[in-house]
Amino acid sequence: MGEPIRKIAFLVDRNELELLHEACLYGADADKNLEKAIKEGGKFRLEFLFDELDDLAGYVAHCANDEESERNQDKWDKLSGRIERLLKLSDNMGSPQKHTVVLPRQQCGLKYYIFDIWIWGTGGVGDFKDKVLRKIQIAGTKSLYNFAKVIVNSFGFQFDHCFGFYDNFQKYHDSKKIYELFVDLGEERSRSWAKGVKNTKISQVFKNSGDKMHFLFDYGDCWHFAVELKEIKQAEKWDLKPVILESIGKAPLQYPPCEDEESQ
Image (cartoon, rainbow, N blue to C red; front, side, top):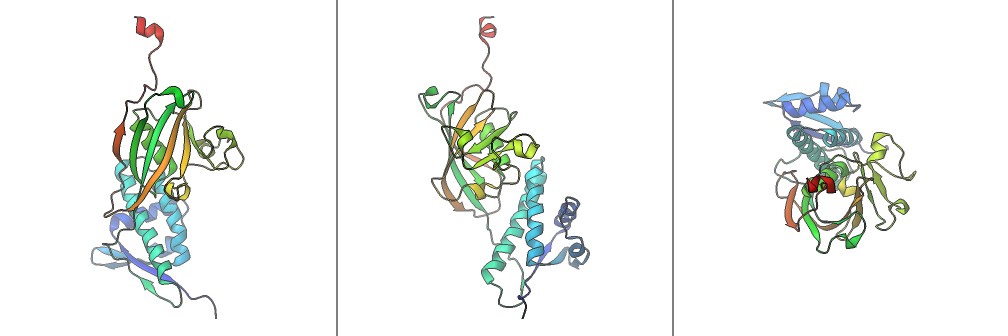
């Protein structure tokens, strides 16, 4: 006997169906499944094999991370979350026989990651006498690229330079784990094993409370941030907007005025 077939069926509205068609334009092989959509009231029933939906999930997550419009990104995030919950639910049920899974809408599989992030400047820990810290809550499904943007904006900086996440706080080039924007841009990476930030989720890098990474922003001025995961908690509802939970200390100016400008 071959391996039992696992099928997953679920309902989507017209907007979600359009998003899935858009994902196909980016390479997702789901056209045949979408063509077989069965209309039920104002919604559409879709059916996938487990592996087919697992493949589609990657493309939907990619679209969510690349979307620049906050409104559209929220739609992609919600769809990505629904698909991930379906896959997880199917896994939990096991695969002893053929079955169809219908997702209860009230279930929420989203997890929030809560971080302490503090800045130590451009020359070392001694740059600031008092800790300048931001406590941030963000969905674990967000990419490191989105996370970096939230970090930079939370300190009042412009998101206008390349950056990377490293596990070595003293010599970032010697890091064993490296995630850099250079990889996504097709530019030279610091090490051959470096990975990108646009398709890497927060949950793939930070696994447990206490996990830390060195976030380096702007390789010219070299702004250093320590990023520590403090807590992972279950969300009560689907809300993917990042939140600054606490702000301690006044952030320095990203571009302080030159001495000549100050004297004028």
